[in-house]
Structure formats: C-alpha cells, structure tokens
Image (cartoon, chains in turn green, purple):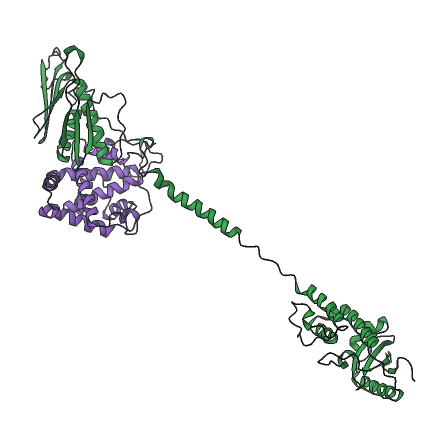
Length: 376
Length: 201
C-alpha cells in the first residue's frame, strides 16, 4: 500500500510517497500508518515550475543540506559539509540575500540514465524558511521514516575559521614588538650618567693646590679645585683658604688644618724677610703680649705649657702661628690665637717683613712672649 | 513525617526540551548573551506590548521561578556585554533556556506579522525601493533603532560598529529573518543550537 505524505507551506511543498511495512495484522486500523520505505520524494516551490525529485538519497541529501544551511543562517558560523556527501543537493548563499539551491540529479546505473543537468533555484528568505519548515515538519512526523529525525549539534570551535584574516590579527602584536625593539635601541644610545666625584676629595686637592700657589703668587686663582665653589676665587691666599676651611669644615678637620698651617707658616716664615730691628722687635713683643693677655680670658685646662711660634707683621697683626709642642696642638682652641689672626683680603706679599716670637701659655694663666731668635 | 522546609522548586519540565550543550563551565558564551538580548529587542520593537508580554509569557510557561519580575528580566538581559549598565554576571544555561523559550513563544504569536514584514522587505529590495515605503516595516526599524541606541553602551566597539542608521537597519532586518526561523516547528531547538555554534569544545 503506498502512502503519500505531504507537507505544504505557502511557498514550498514536500511530497513523500512510500510504502508501509505495517501489514495491518495487528488488527488496528491505524489512521496513519508508518511509512518505512520511501519510493519517491518531490520538492516543489511556488513560482518555479521545475520540481526536485528523487529517491531516498535525494531526500537524505536535501534534508541534511537544508538543516545545515538553516543553522548557518541563524548563527552566521559556517558548518562543515558532511564528509562523503554525494552533494546531490547543495545550498549556498547567493547575492542579494538570496539562497541558491543546486540539485545535481544522479540516477543509478540500473536505469541507464545520464546524469541530469543541475537545477539551480534561487530562493528568497521566506521561501527558504518554508522549505526549512517543511523539512522540520517531516522530521517531527514520527510516522514517516522515523529514522530520519532532527539532529542538531552546535559546531565545535575547531571547525570555525578565523573570522579575520591572519594578517590583520598579527598586526597589533607585530606593531607592539617592533615598537618595543625600536624603543630599546633608542634608549641604548643614551649614555649612562656619569657620577660626579664627591666634593671632599676635591677640597683636599684644592688645599694642596692652594698651598702650592703661594710659591707662585701670579698663578691664577682658578688653579684651586674647580668644584669648590665655596671659595671665592679672589681669596686665593693660602691663609684665606685655610681659614675658610676652618670656618666651613667642622672642628674635626683640625689635623688637616694643622698640617697646612704648619706648611704655610714655614713657607711664609721661610720666604719673608725677618724683622731684625731690635727696637721694633721689642715693640712688637710688647704689643703681642698685651694683645694676647687682653684676649685670653679662659681658664686654662691644660697642665703643661703651650708653645707657639707666632709670626707678626710690622703693624703688629698676627699673620700666622705654629704649634711647637703637642700640647699646643691639642689646646689651641683655648688660646686666643685663632681669633687674633689677621686675615688680609689679598695675598700677603712675601716681601713684607715678619717678626717671629715665641709665645708660651702657662697653666697658671700667664703668657710669656719673647722673640724667637732671642733679644738682639 | 514532618517537613520543615517548602519543597524545593523543580526546574520546569519545559526546559528539558532544550538539550544542554557541552559547555566547559555551564554558562553561556558571550555571543549567545548578545544574541538573546537582540532577539528580545527585536520582539519589543515589533510589538508595542512586547515588554509586558515577556513577563506574561514567562508566567504562562511556568518560568516565573527564573524570570520573577521586570527587574530580574532586566538583569538577565543585561548580561549582554554591549549594554549600557551591563551586569558583570554570567548567564546560566537554565536562565538562557528560559529566555529563549519566552522569545520563541512570543515570536510564534507574532508569526503573521513577522512573515508579512519579511515579505514586504523582500519585495522592496526586489523593486529596489527604499524601506520607507512600507509603513509597518519602517515603524519597526525606527523603534528598533531607538531601543538599541537607548540601551546599548555607545563606547563599546560592538556598538560603534552600528553607529549609522543603515547598519542598524541591516541588523534589525537580519534579526527579523532570524525571528522568522524561530517561529517554525523546530524553531526553538534551531535557535538554541545556533547560539552555541563555534563555542563548544
């Protein structure tokens, strides 16, 4: 008994003719017998006079292609074509939002028919929907070829091709890496900043250059340390430098000061002509003693004599002093000598005569002053 | 036997009609959240009573456990990453199924209208007339554009892609065609499956 099943939609009609294996022996008059074998199927579209028809292969190919294409249409993701398909029916996108259905009828060798010409139908979206609906209704019909049923599975990630071309995707990464490389090369050429040597060693060198500059008074003041901007270039006398050192450096820097003082005084005393006039020496002696007595008002804490060799200029100013014993070095701050020392603004001309006196500070608080070389 | 707590709500049976895709972490992918929200947006643009109808249909289908009220519906829809006040929560598979069922149910109610508009669009493109000629269609497009611009975050790249009227019209029309497919016999299953295309392992 042949059965005809028809699924009609406004734009598309799907007709299936087949046989049932149900021989009715069960005694029930089934209103709708199960169609288990397909003889012929036909798919007709409104507006196209050519209908697609074929057997089971055609139907299978049709429903698989339609279902796949519908999913593609809904998600926009390409579904892979089933392998081994005979490609009887193919659905592709066409221009103008149309869908091209291509049917390549292949008849089997038994009928000795030549392969038919491919039929191409362009479907609008509504027609396509009607086709999909017809197929879905067929799937849903459990009494018709129940082995062909709706099977939907989302496409796996592996199957989707990259949405954008590889060149465009690689571009931002390439730009990033290349800009990093360019920046690295550019920064490579910036020199490492040089570290300035610290000011203290410069002052040391400046002191030594300062002491040597007294021997050559015409040497430019700029010989002194370049980095030491505390020293006025005009104040280039060694004493001036020494006193600046004494003023600016903490009292812990005395030893260096002592050494330079000794050196300077040596140089000074060695180079300056001595005052030899006896009357002048006596006068200077008195002046010196008075001056020191006046200035010295501290209670001595030392217990031995402090002996100094003091250089005095013709006008009575103390131009320098030298320690003559260790105690003198230790307790120099208790004597008024550092304060009384005369600080000329310009370099002392070495031609000025200097008188040298021996000054002794006793623990008893008495100052003894006498000429270094003795009374003439 | 004493029962101290109310019986646990079982998930509505209707949700079982949609299979669970093999997602890695039981939540919806980004594209799915976007797609669901856009379909709902298209439904609202089609029919003036759309927003209210969504809640009514939820109740009809027995899904009010998932979509309790307007606010929870808004929160579910706002998982769409392009929304202005996007919720940084993920969308469960259960919640997504509920929204899809509601959407397709409403789409089926609007079958006639959707079909009419699709045919009109087809004819207008064939004759190469502008879309203004069909009143209902241009109405739909205008409402869709207004809803989209009002709700989507204009700073997102995905939204900037739809900055012109033409692009929004194209989007609206493609959503209309998808709605057409949602009205079919197997529309729900097809739509549900298409949401996960390219997202499953």
